[in-house]
Length: 259
Image (tube, rainbow, N blue to C red; front, side, top):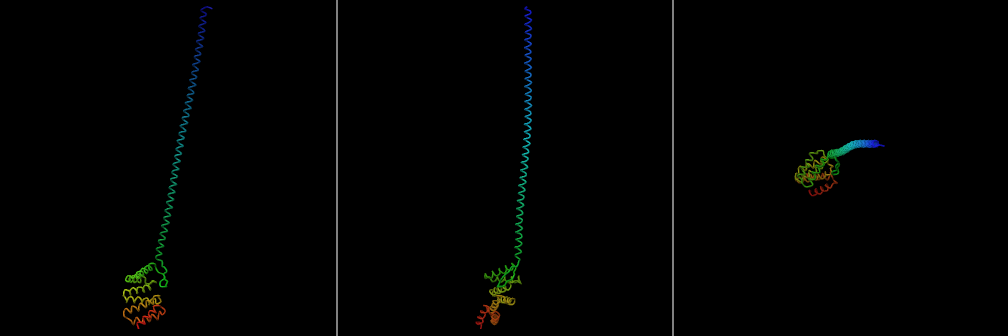
């Protein structure tokens, strides 16, 4: 083999080696590009997955926010409902209290009317063993006049009893009022008026429990007036009219002394 031939074969083999190396380089570049493309695809997929996760997270956040809003809305409605319920309960309590107060006022009003009417209702009175009906004011005035008499204020008692007889002309107290008026006038030495009222009692109520005392009082007035003849006649009539009375015994004793 010649040197030229050897050189050719060396060149050819070198060319094949270079081509092999080039092909190997090209192959390695393809692999790198594929790897890069694959990596890029994975990155893109990863980015897409991240974006999807971000979108899903955002959607979950919006859902959570909406749910939170619904909860707050429910809380508000519940609060308003409770407020309305409490207001309703307060209104019911206020209404119940107003009704109770109204019932109390009505009861007090009815009681007040009944009390006022009762003041005008006649009451049964027993005086000197005699029963009769009297107006409350009538009873009050008579009791007040007699209280004045019992205190020994005969001048005031005379005024009170005289006024009572004028106001209550048909009163069941009238005969007793005449008797005590005569006694008050006798104590005040108003003898003529005293005798006149005792005589009115004897004329209007000869069977009155105080009638015999009234007749003896007439005799006493006559003695004070120095009319002994009239006094004896009055006491004799007393003994004849009321023989069983204690005043009749007193009259008999005085008649004995007057003779």
